[in-house]
Length: 485
Image (cartoon, rainbow, N blue to C red; front, side, top):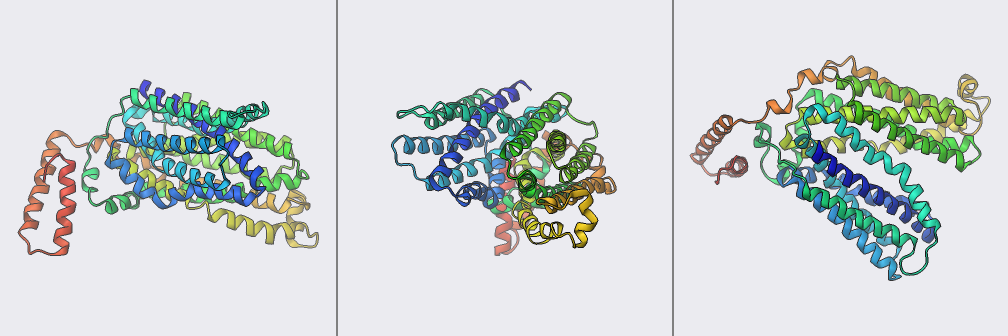
């Protein structure tokens, strides 16, 4: 894992600095616009490239050198940060420039995530996938705690001149990008070995882009795991949408209490990541996924019942600690079971399916909280208030607490249900490991011979659009085996 450790170190340093830049940009944007909508549009700009281009990104990750794809994604972030820094120090930065930067960064992330996730399976022994993914979870959780503190400390210095505090943060970000790129340059990242799935998936860029979805839907165990995450994310997304409003409503808009709960979650995520990087998770990884969802959902449900820091802090820490168990166990299953030369496409497809809940959950949560549950729970004569009032209270935030409880229990039941679905529960037994799918030299030769015979048969048929398309796809498959056709 030495090579992976170097790449990971470069990434965590770079992501921390980028998170500091993001913190500074958020403050700068709000000072310029004083608009929550303007800030929300930055998130929309960041996620839109992923929603539109994720399947294409997965196909390109599998087609081309993965190290190159990682470096290009980092280079895109370098260019956008450098442009923002140049505009800022010259006094020409406008708030809409940050939207363009967010689109560029989102585009880079769309390619970066499947490339890094797929690279782990070729850099790390499969027995170490849990530890490697535990370390990667720290890349996501660590900056959430450290970036606001470090960026806030630099901004508090109130440096003047061309290189003020905000400019200094962006300069540090640029330096760390080159550290991350340098780490990639000195580490050998093997290209994935050939498998039958990889050869048969070759074709036009459009065919390769949708292949990840086909791969998942043809395998009930992978589809079942993906549905666990789809519905788990839907319920947890509903809860997280109204978690902040509930806390603020129950504490008379106390931002310090809200900040303490957020910090507790970030600390829990870091602790969970450290535990997973040392422990690697349960031997039966599906139990880590399903049991993790049960525990996380259950603790999330009781966040809705709690009314203050004595309840919120430990529950938030525990829930955040369990999250790395869920995600690293799930990631290790996919890395071990999916053919390595199609992982870019499959991982992009599964992430897109999981993230599809992001625009749905807030709509459901907002509608139920604002128009149904909050009015009902503040009305002492309503049925909901009389039934649930003794548990959740009847003041502001009670309706949102009730919704969080049911959302958390829903997520917990999703995990519990997986134990009764054999393709999900026994996924690790049903699906073969990827190393059993790698084509040996003799198998490659046999596959090549079969493809050549198929091409000969197609050439003997009358010309047609269907035959020409089949020949074109066959040509891609032959080239993937090193045959010049």
